Length: 445
Ligand code: PXG
Image (cartoon, rainbow, N blue to C red; front, top):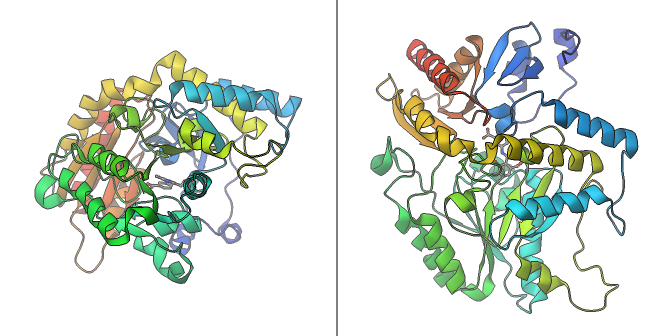
């Protein structure tokens, strides 16, 4: 279905929308407007075709314009646009929870619905802390995050996150008792690694140091992204996540994986937990859950966590938490249709097949002017550029802009360019992405 040609807003009409995570004045002086999308492509409001190398924003895993999702949402809205899930329910919510439990890592079969990654993270943190109390360990209130971690923008998420610009404005309003592991990015040891870097598993042992400092009896949970996305694609060194799991087990601390970007096939299995063979106790997801079509998130909890709440009189509300739109019917319809597509087209494992092509494409950029690292895992890739002296981020922005002018949409974080194309990408398109990105790097050097 082709939408009507987009009415391009006049410059004066751009002011009212306070854009998220955007340099508003820079953007509004020179706007980039997307008007239509299908398959691997967007079309701009002016009608230019753009190859989508980031799946929208890491979310459109099955590619754009999926008819089945639009139809399922339309049918649901026509039948019942909303139903409460507080002391009420509707069938699609239960069906979706069962479908998700069926593809989850072992034992993570209790599902709490949210509307975004940020809400999933705050939900998981609240479940972790409340769980400790429910099992008689209320002194465990601390949460350990990681430097450069991104866990959305709720107060919980920015507290455990490790991105300074998200934190510094709100320093006085952070969760108490949070500490951070070191991040695992080391160009000195790991530059140009293909797949997971070999150096750095020992960085997980820093958790032992934090436990020695705070005492395990004060720590509820550790939260990490299996692969950090927002900070510019930081991969876990071989053995690192297993080590974190061992230390958490030893000290009876919950391990939370934030799989908002790694979930739903990004690295070749439904979740990174399965690809890395490390099972967390809680897992946060969003994005690919509905192919980005309708906002939705989900927290996957281990059975033991859910069971710990199911005590006391039956009329008790066990967890005082939820959103008006938890398991919104339209979102459930979108998610069910999305899971159907993933299953039918084998998309949750396709990234494993394409990973060598992605690796080839990304590492072909090694040697270009200013390229100080190339890294990859599954259908995630990144190119790190030497920052221009005194102007960090300007080189990354110029490369991003040049790619867009030349018909490829990449994602820029500082001087790192991240790639995360829809899982339907064809090898030739991966080569095109690398070619255009390479040209942009050369021409902005
Ligand atoms: N956790 C992780 C790991 C994420 O990547 C969130 C939580 C928050 O999700 P919501 O739905 O509240 O935005 C995210 C979001 C980027 C980029 O460029 C990444 C995200 C969002 C926007 C841009 O890497 N991830």
